[in-house]
Image 1 (tube, protein in one colour):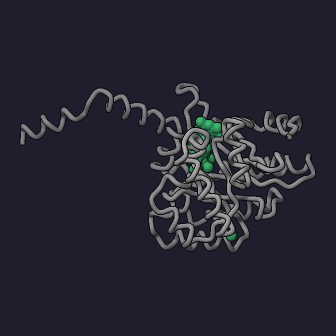
Image 2 (cartoon, protein in one colour; image 1 turned 90 degrees about the horizontal axis):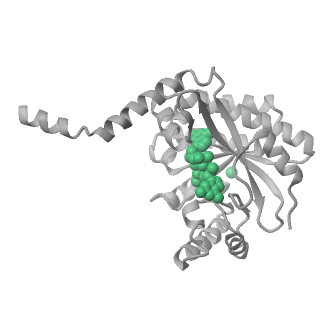
Image 3 (tube, helix red, strand yellow; image 1 turned 60 degrees about the vertical axis):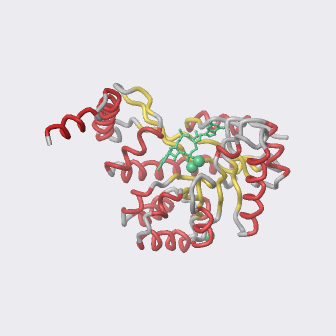
Length: 279
Ligand code: C2E
Ligand code: CA
Ligand code: CA
Ligand code: CA
């Protein structure tokens, strides 16, 4: 037992230690972050591939903290998810995004869609849908302009309340989007099983379409398949004109990526769309 103890202790490397300490620090800081107003929602515009017009935006969360600096969502979302803090943080994102959409629509006198990411833990909040519905009402946004992006991770839990919530989302007229398409194992069967409206082709495939045939073929097939299921297709992570031209050739509906714009704070986003000219 002694030997085993020493042995297992040696697994606890210095790097792991640093990782765990940082995790604790992030968790601790995150507990008061909402009250301290450290979170800010950024918006990345989405474009119609054929016309070049702005059609909407994806809300992406940013966190600026005194002692930690700016932490990327790839690092803090999993921790927020693990602690359950994502429930309140996620509600904040929904409220902010819908409020912003209202402001944007009022001043442009046009309709746009707003895509918001939802992670698995948020579905365990049985008030999720009533919260979303009242947020829609408060910001005066018809349900059809809200798009909820989920990944396979949400569906994989296989819990029945997930199915109920998704059915309620459909019934409410809110759009459902499959995020990171192509990275999981079961996206195809989920597309058949649930009523999705939008499919987002993962950045890793878009990244390769101008360089290799395999990625090009995959993206082309994904667009055709999505269309045959009556889904609209968004290509994410578009960084070059060349990628955009190929996507247009494949009849991909919408695109977002650094080629057009990085995610921007609300004010900068409005400025961007007001000065943006296309084609
Ligand atoms: P995602 O939903 O797949 O979001 C797309 C990510 O790709 C964003 O990273 C975006 O900034 C980045 N991106 C967009 N265009 C390009 C491009 O042309 N090139 C490259 N290299 N990257 C691009 P971000 O904002 O760091 O977010 C990372 C992930 O964190 C998101 O991936 C999403 O899973 C999660 N996340 C962000 N905000 C929220 C949120 O409010 N709630 C939840 N539950 N998750 C969020
Ligand atoms: Ca997303
Ligand atoms: Ca993605
Ligand atoms: Ca639907």
